Image (cartoon, rainbow, N blue to C red; front, side, top):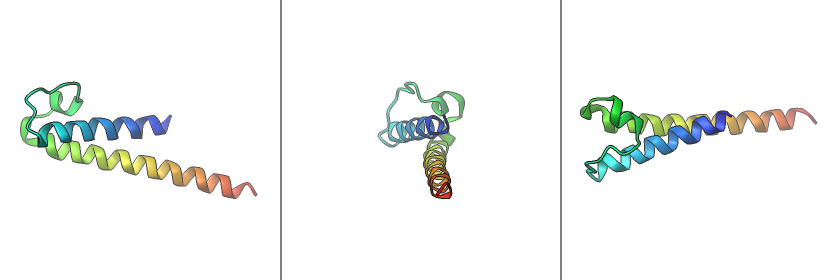
Length: 71
């Protein structure tokens, strides 16, 4: 379930970041573009990407530790 959160953060952040960097006028389905003022869109999107990657790597490391500890 935690992987789903990481993937969701990564997709939302990456999509919103691409949308803003390519100067897309439509806010589409990116949450941060609807909730935050325009000056914060790029920063929030980048933070969401970083958080998503962090969650995914942390979960992967946790699973590897748990798997190697059962030997």
